[in-house]
Image (cartoon, rainbow, N blue to C red; front, side, top):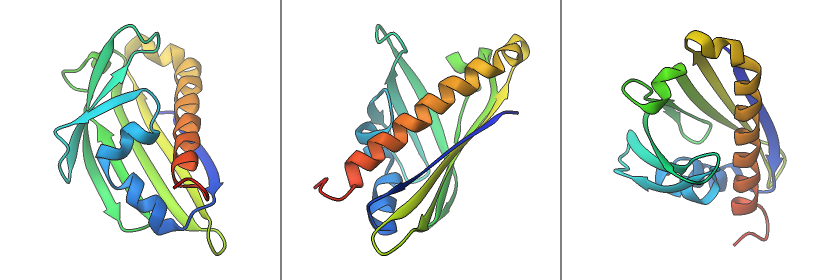
Length: 150
């Protein structure tokens, strides 16, 4: 199972970053390709995302796995009975926050992918695409919470 990890220090205190990552409805503000969030509850939500080409939308359901305020949050993409079932057996994302100075936070985002069937042969492409998504998420988060981003 490939795991892709990206890390960045953002110019915002951990609590400010936590307030964004702990609210699924705010994913539209910082997670790449998320157009809207539906049926958001404390422990589950659905995102509506644009496809890679932007010509159609995809729905993805998520379940909260763990939350340790204000340090760690992880969720599972529910791939069973979804368009993603063809290529994935599992997809789990975890975000960790660590103070990095007085008003900065080290943000680590890791996604663990379980690839199905022939998709295992495309592991390099999946890692590359996931790396791009996580970098985009960090870019969006940094723009949203960074100093001067009010």
